Length: 277
Length: 279
Image 1 (cartoon, each protein chain N blue to C red):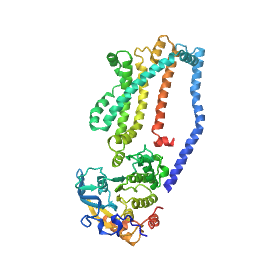
Image 2: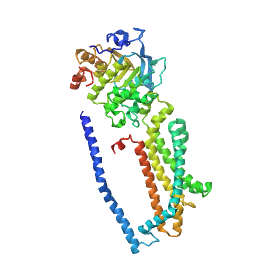
Image 3: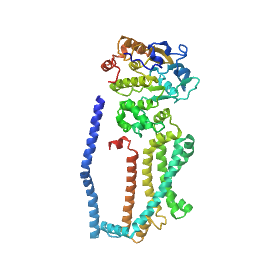
Image 4: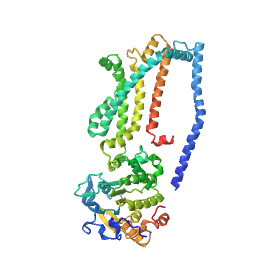
């Protein structure tokens, strides 16, 4: 009984806590916006007074105006889509390869012995170090860019999903077996859902990685994409265009992270951390 | 009124001390839910079970006592089919279900889906709901397992076992991790469900009072075999009278605990046992 009561108290504390944070949130976030805004104002002031020359860093107002012009002309959306397409294509390949390898290694002893050692060895290679080799193999078109992203995203997916499968409580598997679950049913109802949190964590790492690799890969003789825009802008010392592209990189990364978070909220609704939130 | 099982097919329908209960030698017609002859189990150099014999009649409620590491759980795992066994040695009803000490609900499935785990057919949900209603948990059928209390989780695990209408129900210290009051309620619930569905029950426990309160027959596992057997003659619900105390002392002595060490019965138990029903 005592236990019940204390649990209730904790629950009500949790609720009141979340309520108070919800009410306090706007005030808190207003405070947190202050210093970035001040920095932007300082930056604008510096540009206007000539302390920061335009060829070093364009003023925020100029950057905004350039962004607007680039959106209207279609230059920004088109190149953004090209970059996004590369990242997604690479990620999709990495997802399929990484998941397949992890499932093979996670579910069978033979698969583990065959797949895990080489993957563990290869993952120590920084994937960007393979850029020269990939250029030799795949030329300077789209293939090496996508291949680099695919390689860089395979490992976080593999490592997390493999760890997730191996980390499932054997007691749960045992219980499911006593209720007649075997083979495919066991994988579908117990192993894959159990490994899902780890997989989604891997997906987040993979997304972050794909962005990083995209930036570098797009420096390889691109004729479209954000990297191409940046390279061009560099040749003409257009710091405003460079900043616009950097902001887009940041926004895309933020959006991707938000997407996985939303996916987690939906798919992992059963987790205690999400239930309390 | 008598609370001995009412099912006329049950071998328990006679007096509780009826010798028809045990052993095919005594009653060759009695149908058995479990028949074990000469079961050996060893882990490395440690012999856990040596030449164990065990019969459980259909519909019989048997409690198995033993010290930690006496092989109670090993025996139960064997009956549950989790450890491979020679069918010549171990013959247990294939229609069995297990309730573990920890409820072992899949945290990513809502309660009713946990109950319906492995069920096939379009009426799986209806059957799961019915089972949850029986354990008084129908209002939590859409809850996530992590939001259940310890007692609720065990009731869900009980529903998950019962929904399969097992002929053999294996209970592996299912009440060990719930608080004392919840445990008393669970005792009443298990008895009610046992009377209703009539499976053979093997309850593995280290709680002597629990064993005497619930079972038709109490076994003590020691040194890898059944070292003692006590028929519980009292009619249910059982109060903690002189018979209860005498049986308790005998069993505790078998387990190597002298009665002076055993400690007094708690007040809550004294209040609850006279009824034996759900509080």
